[in-house]
Image (cartoon, rainbow over all chains, first blue to last red; front, side, top):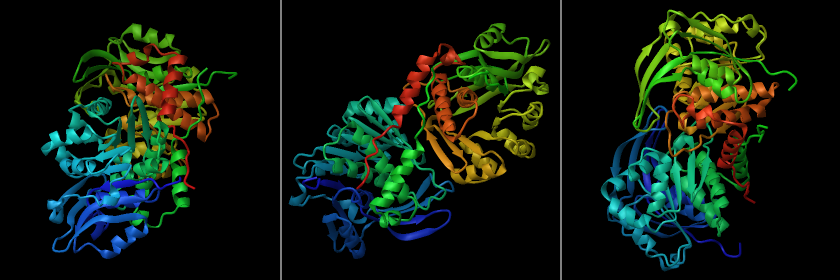
Length: 310
Length: 310
């Protein structure tokens, strides 16, 4: 690559309080933009847009910078508190209950891009209010590929805005149930096709421990999840998946259909590390060789001999 | 192959009444042994052991024979009625309610193998009471590979018998929730490892629309399900999967680890046809070329470029 690809993410930067059947971690650094950035930065430099309060750890900001995340777009509100989320996971680690949400500085988030960010070519609008997603999108001059995540809340209370921004998006990353909710379909293929008609050519359906599906034009790709004997904390896995997915796309720079398949596996690979620790601990010590070994494990996971009927 | 592999299945032969959100089919031929046989017979000749009453359609018996299913082991009770099951599927087609079960001749099923069946090399004990599974197993002289399916009912009311037969089985095919129930584990990998310690070296975890996992010794393989735009009737898909899986194993005759992976894809391939029709309609018109094309679609579904980090 002659010049580094320019990948931008906007989303939440948070402090989580995580309770699992086995352990508890208060003051865990979280947020969609944080998880995304840590993952994507393994593959391409990232620019972050978000907001925190005075209580957000300076050490984390320094750590993200050291990982190649441009933090110039992180607004620090001196008299405010960081967005906080508290949740408890069920025994099977696949379902969770939200115990508490404090929006804090996130309630008045008004994302303004530093001038240096406006030439970003790859843009990921992580899960925030759709009008804010649109506001960020409009500040980027000529994005080559725009990805977006959303959630049931926005489908419920801000669907017109969501549909508006979706009309300008290349790839939607969405949970299975939310894909159904957005389209009113009971069948996932119909839901994905319905979303493609709204705008995004690519629809990535996240299915947690069951992996993810990519619908790209007419093409369908199934990415497995790696069966793990121990899941420490699934928080952020979807955002890490998005970071790996978009990070690989940015790294390829001129992505074609088959690159999106590989991007799905990088997303899955990084997500499999994420769930093995609290916060982004599972990603903290990664290097190219560990990522390569895990990527190869994914390749082996679905590999089979093409023995055909005669 | 110099001699045809000898594959035997014991299980239910039934008449179902299926209600889906879109349609209803009373008098649909069903039963685990039926679905298994129709699928497996695409790959290898099959011998069936089961019981029906006078109400079971002669035309179906003739049809199964024409497909290469040896029906000498089907007991017909002249003054009895066939096992009947009635169920209704939910909107998403993944969950269903049992509306009615009539055991009929199945209540006194006492499986006796014709002498000609005792040399069977590949044996599938479909989902019936575990003592009956054991009774069949003991009538087969020297099976090379034994597969078994079971259900929550037997884990609840006949666990000692189930554990006994499991100790003599090579491959258990089981639903995800049932694998957890059998072992008391919340984590699927731990559940599979726990089952391997009971006996079966291979554990196939069926996950419906999410595909299936194979744990074979230390190896793990993930088989996707084909995303389908329309599912007509999922009844029998698990039995058809088992038929494809065991059928391929019997066809290979001396199966190695990698053959089991291919067997998983044949199981998935045939199951994907099964759900596209009521009863075994979706399998009725298959030939090698249609199976090959669908197998190739599965290969494409998980194929990705091994682009690695440098």
